[in-house]
Image (cartoon, rainbow, N blue to C red; front, side, top):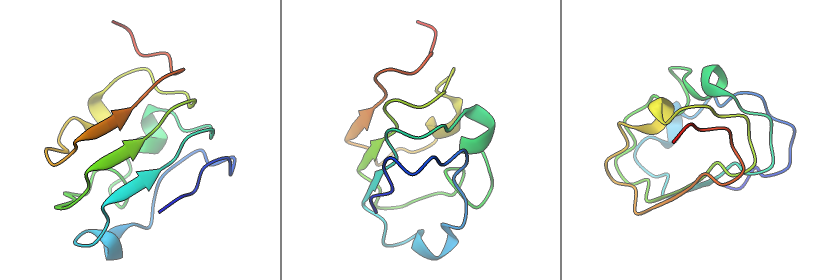
Length: 83
């Protein structure tokens, strides 16, 4: 699913994709930690999600996606995540 550069501030409405979603591209939006932690968004237990691109958003921590164990690729450049 590619929703890059859409001025999104949150991720929601992905419940129907929980089994099938493999790649999620969310770069170049305005998503912050709160917007990434909604229960019908990234907090779901995606079984097949291997690629997540959250580059160039407003994230400050890794907490919103720390539970996603199937990830092989995670892109977070140009956020404000503390080292």
